[in-house]
Amino acid sequence: MTQDLKIITRNIWILSLVSLFTDMASEMLYPVMPVYLKSIGFSILLIGVLEGVVEATAGLSKGYFGNLSDRTGLRKPFVQMGYALSALSKPMMAVFTYPLWVFFARTTDRLGKGIRTGARDALLSDEATPETKGRVFGFHRSMDTIGAVIGPLLALIFLQFYPGNYTTLFFLAFLPGILAIVFTALIQEKKKLQTASVIKPGFWDFLQYWRRSPAQYRQLASSLLFFALFNSSDVFLLLQVKAAGLSDSAVIGMYIFYNLVYAAAAYPMGLLADQFGMKRVFVSGLLLFAAVYAGMAFASTWPVFAALFFVYGLYAAATEGVAKAWMTNISAKEDTATAIGTYTAFQSVSALLASSLAGFIWYAAGPWAVFSISAVAGALVAVYIGFLKNFEK
Image 1: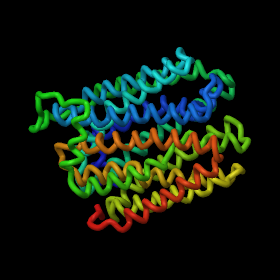
Image 2: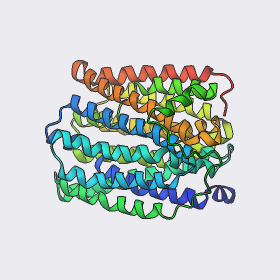
Image 3: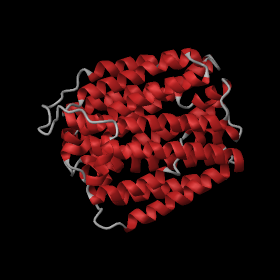
């Protein structure tokens, strides 16, 4: 335990607290977002397109700003700007109710995520060694997800007293966002990287990294991007719970439960990844994903949904932080932000296709088709990665 405390440095704590407050703000709104969007006239198909577009915006900006962070050798300014934009987007959602303006507000939020992600993950990577990356990223994901527990819980309590009052909830979500901005000022940035350049890259220059990146990076990223094409927004899981006849409170409760499991399991999963290899833990997570989506295709009662969201929390803990830790281990230190940014750029384009396609399939063939196809894809990717050679770390 003492050794683990030494691994979690001051910067890791600050970055984790910033993520906690930001996720608290975002997740106060996420479970009610599909219900809110439907109340102002969005169809299921349009919700899918919206979620895909905003994630694609975040991803493409991650590639550019990750590359820019590596080129300039700076991390903190990108972290501060990114979290500030995400905080400001919350009251914007309360003010703008027309579809085009909602797209703008949601895009602002995701743009903030795109600006900060590569630089933040590079800071986390700099605070760790290859032997401790799993725990460092697992701790950050755990703290981040604690915010995702507190946020929906606060939303649930608020809506119990003020049902349907979504506008006020958007304004309340601005408060933890402000706290996140304040904490970013405490980040201690090391001196500029020696490879820093005064020449700013073009928007698409990060794509060049794919050609010069290590072969292992391309193999891993390619398989994860294929998986991303079938991993649509979690909004569809919440819509399935709602479609089964459960109340808004039950929908939010399921999401809180999922995040509790995720938060509790993220650090232990990181520890297992450090001890037994990233690949083993990640593949196990993909198999859990396949099991959850197969179950979602036929689930209809709250005990079954609860069991599936429990397993889904384990899947998230075994993959999200582990994937980033794994990727930084097979990338050069001076390319850390670019490596993560490039991958997440492609990943978010895949998310655009996945969520849009899921919305169309849901509309045309029903939810069972969406979840069944995703389950098969998750299992196939797990088998493929399992057979990759020289990928234990």
